[in-house]
Length: 488
Ligand code: GLN
Image 1 (cartoon, protein in one colour):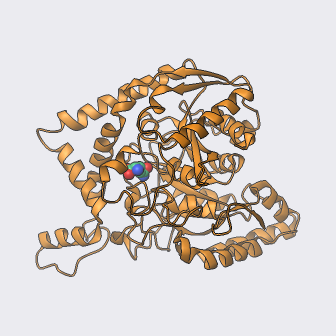
Image 2 (cartoon, rainbow, N blue to C red; image 1 turned 180 degrees about the vertical axis):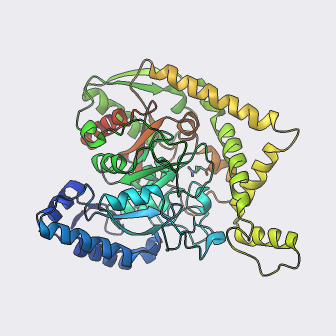
Image 3 (cartoon, rainbow, N blue to C red; image 1 turned 60 degrees about the horizontal axis):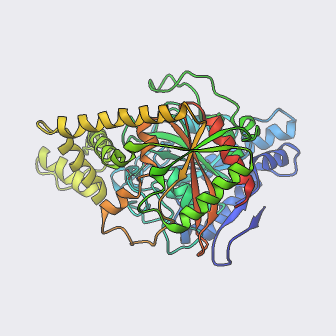
């Protein structure tokens, strides 16, 4: 069902394209039920090594596959994702099956409803294989903060897949799903996509409903697809995007046919290269790969020019104040009463709250709650949270200024390739600083796509981040397609 790439000790494998799979199902050459069964077999073999899936939703998947097969047998018109096996990050709730957000706090939680993105995927005929591992409450850049153990990178199992959507990225890289959903608050789709050599999409804030996304930082949280190629990612985005009455921040703007947009080619597009993303701390091999990508865009008829984004240097501190402040408020609901784990050591109400939160949350989540509560506390609010919001505004204006002169901006997705498991766990600040290239677009609300852009000498993937203005996903896909087509 697929062609193997990479060295023999890796699990890297490219799935067939979504269009080819769907055509096979429509023509009766492939049964959706067999396709799903094939994926479950591969998952059984490989998942113990990679720890990508936390939970399989077999019954639901097979029922859906059979429904699609019945439609195909009758010759009914098939929806766009008919029979396509997908995985979903465990921060998106699924009715009646475990949804943990990678936390012990939500162990055993069986939500009574589906996230809107999940509902839309299934309505489009997708077969959801199961729920994917991630950093606890999506807080992290390496997947090492999951309460259920780290995910391993299919390209080198001694290395992290990135985070927090590490399971979503590794599942696509290892062909344990044709495509997946992740969430991105400060880079959690774009950075792991880069580390695992797959495509990852950060839709414009509000483009995809957050209903049923377990909240981390509500003004930054976004749901988006990861896939093995740009066109598949674009197809998925068109399915999950759109206004949702259940999410007041979702945009009423009409949804474009992103796959068709991506077919238009990149010729004539103006591409900005910001010097601030190519300075200190950028790995030389990552830089060389991205420079090749930029040269490929020039060869494809793009006009490449420098742009300046000087506030980039304030983005990491601003992000880690705003994200933690919102997290401290969002995570207050996990008190052992309304939601989540309840400690048996509950002599008094206060002890019950404190033991439940102490035992239910991991170290990174506690660190964020403390940071956020501090940033919001009386006397510090103006100095930290308010100031960070002002920086956020300046960053957004700076991007808008740059987009007056260019159609897209290209940068590395991360200053470094996938690092070794355990290499950065002792130094949270170093981990935060490596988010420098992704948190800016998060704060500005704009959209972006990570596309594979070559490998290092050791064979690790490098991801290029293509950023575009609000609701210009189509432009980002066109540029990403051109980089993909160059086959760097
Ligand atoms: N790595 C960033 C963080 O730890 C982003 C996480 C995310 O996007 N969910 O906050």
